Image (cartoon, rainbow over all chains, first blue to last red; front, side):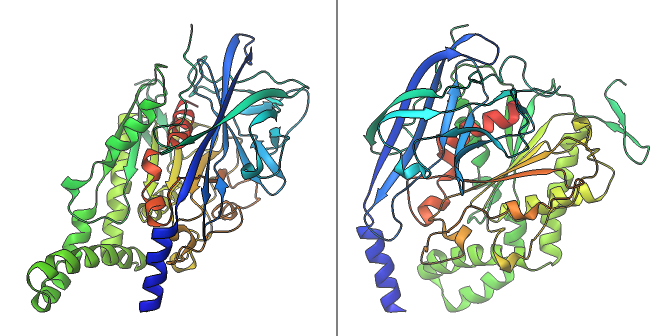
Length: 169
Length: 277
């Protein structure tokens, strides 16, 4: 028992970690055809021992919208899963099917600074509960969106994640 | 009168009005102290508000507190143990230990205290439903067990949750954070089917890989894989749940990760999406 407690103490003391925020913005058309700014971000924690390096999901925020797209690490890659409130554009996509994908890597911890290739294959289909005009996101298109992502070392994640782009409407 | 809807048993009740203020009901987990010490609803409100960047969203947050119910159930045990551990040691160690461990024991046992907590939550949910506000539940840790049970109980009564009419849903979405629902000790394996239809009740389960409450490993062995509660949904067309296990990197490890969900900006972004949709 004493040895286990000592191990825990050591892990806590030695488990120094370094935190990074990755983010980038581009301009484009949203699903309603309006000119918007889009932001992607994710955070990553590098650890010395035990817990290993790993990262949270990649999020895409759209100017004037509350509909964030979450590109999550799955067994088949980094995928934005179709929700009930999305539909495929020019293709049928089942629920939880890929409404988008990040093409650079299969695990988020392997994503690097530089060009991030991200696809969007769906559009929002709001229902009577949805806030009008607040659910748009990047227009579906064949070509991937290319974000230039920068990496920033931060003291803590809570105060370092970039805000959503300011709405110019 | 226009807000009345006919329930599945032909009983009139107030339907949810999408134009009303969207409410978040926060259900806490293992805690020390009393109900008056708990203000996690403020944390959630501020988290979401901080991520809106001026986009209007009419919402509020309140909390379902049950720590006093737990404390009352543990009072006799504390009295007995404090006879043996008097003074500073008793106050500093025994009381918090009993509260933390006792909260878990109460939830594990299907006894009267757990039932009281669960029914109190169901009652509060139905009070908000009667007022017509769209309701979203955010539950942390042990609180996710009570929230899971309460929502499934309401679905199981068949008086609510007409699948194709969200106005009959007392709960529009469920969010759990740092939940032990995937652990065998709690013996929760499936959700209650909602019935035939095309709409889905969303459940997002946030977890950090180093969170020992999620993995069940006190020594912090990282949770592996990607699926914890997604397996609770069946492939039946009558299931009606859309469940996502969503991994987050809190940026802290072990128990610090377990209490770090409340302030992670990404969860704030997702909550704004959920309640706006």
